[in-house]
Image (tube, rainbow, N blue to C red; front, side, top):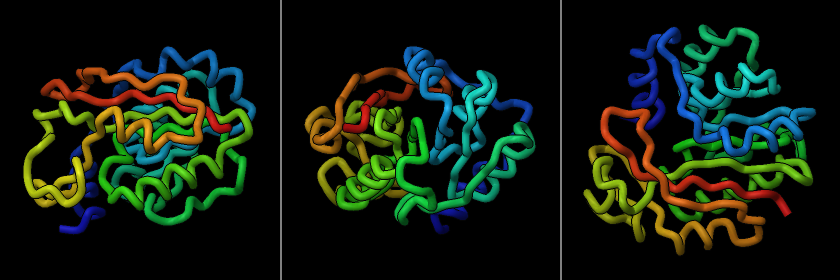
Length: 207
């Protein structure tokens, strides 16, 4: 099963009315509000959890995902929100400096190190001069969701249950965001899923 087909199968079973979000963006709400003159790009938006958070607060947001089924769920719940189908391994289809912020929630940890570096560099390109990147990525402590399991392809990058998945330690976080103003990087527990998920929550500003 291709990655696109894998995610389409997952999101085809989602009900738009059941969409909900956790409040991981709340500490940055004031900063996002101050920058709300330009759109927020929600990369790897899935069914639209973080898109819903932004739209409810009146912030312009563009929902972006590789899965057509995911974007259908966004359209059903939030018909006024623009959507863009894209592949994060390719150059983002946006002009330089277009976005006030980029949200990349649980979508940057499926790729080789070289691909991940290119993605983060391209995110910086589309951000405005004072733009923010807010993201969550798998922690090496995330054993409930595959950390240390499967075949190691690169350091902390595993082939597991038919998918490739990366897990970050602090050294990799610092390495990936070298050249950014790192406002926050801390390990947190997500409770949105059936099992607790260990992630890095990262806030970085373009510089």
